View 1 (cartoon, rainbow, N blue to C red):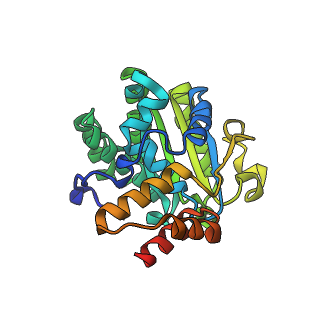
View 2 (cartoon, one colour; view 1 turned 135 degrees about the vertical axis):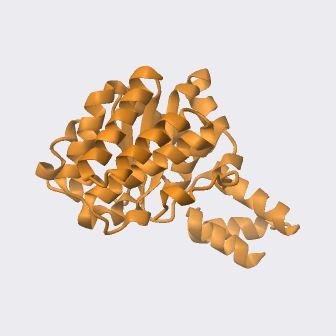
Length: 266
């Protein structure tokens, strides 16, 4: 887990290099829910590219402009890899969300000083309720005063499943109530939440996610073509079309499998 006093600005994320029409249909469907002020579940088998899609929303300006136009400046996507807080308690998870929100604002160079001040004051109290109040105050400030729509992208949510509690969804409901239609979540999963949890656990947030599911196809032609082009440029080698087609036939275009096969061949 990252710490407040050891945060650094990362180099450009790999997802920022992808072409604007990558995963165009799936991203359009995800954003259709977000525009309505709802949340959405992104579901697929492992290795297909859920993390990649979330990275496109977070780090690829071309993709956001493609789908949101000039209005993309009013949307702020926060990539939250829950594998970093695996087996952590609820208070640590919301502290991590707070930290990732601040980091994402630093990358876009917007409102980071005000949010950093609130975060520092909240964490110094070392109290779960104070930390969540600080996060709530931040979300209110960004959405109601700065007219941003905050979208929390919960990557690898399935690793968080064993320790998630109803309080987690209750707190998301509180944040959503404060921000109204300017707050959404995207849950990246290997199967829908309704198949994992009893409805009683989801009850506080259920109306915002019920039946809001986007299934990710195994094969993304634009994304695979980009990876092939990138590999060829970085290695200085060419992949014969016959070999490429054979690999696609064997893998079905599965993102991770196809990449590993291409790298192995090269």
